[in-house]
Length: 401
Image: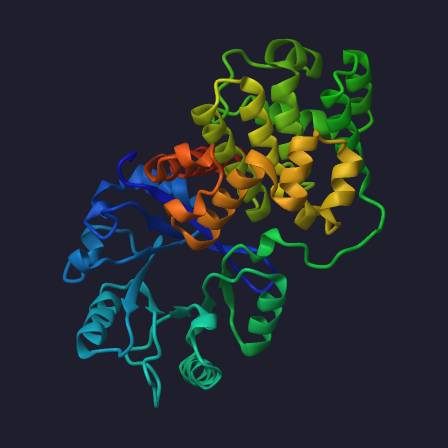
């Protein structure tokens, strides 16, 4: 799997709930037959209980797709660059006859004057790449055949709202990592306790004080211990108490996991798009930090910077206000608020890679430390972080059965 460069991104519905995953195979040879390297167990790990969109490269256009993918788990995603040719229509029809759901991704205006036949289940494209009249034609054509529209690379909450009003049903992109609406309402009790716990751990408070804070919300202790003991995080010895966790694992690791708990919902689960993005960004940043510096403190700061980079979307509060509440180190605070310093440069690289799906080019690596990065390493780090998060989610699903 290391040579494949496989990762995934969420596709959300109109209520910002997880609908499916978009699997991408990245790297210099990503259009080759890399899907053959994706076994059933790995596909199950990546998808959990959600369908996945898999883009069909040129090499696979004439294949019997039922020999490669399970029909009930995979949505075949075909690509049309401009005109929807007879060849593309024939492939859509062949996939339908094999009982697959199909998606058609448009990279240019097909000049439609009627419905798309055979009817794809999903029509997806990047709305910013189309003129307004072309966009209206596509929306109208989709409505006539009940084809569901997917907007790609949606980057802001404003764009999400506009496209929803246009008639789009599903949305791909990093818009959900932006605050929906800034507020100054009081935080829920559990979140306030977690913020205080984060401060206590960061300030190296006495163990008794940390334990006392956890006792105010016993379910948080359960959720933290569940997370620590998961196979995805692979602790050598089962941890039975908060005191044991502090002694065996250290304050640095506890701080990381408390940060993760900030994103988890109240139902003791670690499977939601914002949490997944926070965990993946944090892990990528941590791996980059270890690659670039031998100082453990730098990789720890990198991890926290990545994990907290979407915390403003969680609380719908200004980032500078949250940072003040958390009393973060200056280097981390500058990176999160202004994308300044080495951590800020690395965070910008990770954010762009997560939004656009490609590692940065040399011109984008304007930080002396970042110039030491190999794009192939970034792809590997993203894949590793994705698989670790998928394992964590899968364990949560299996424990709920």
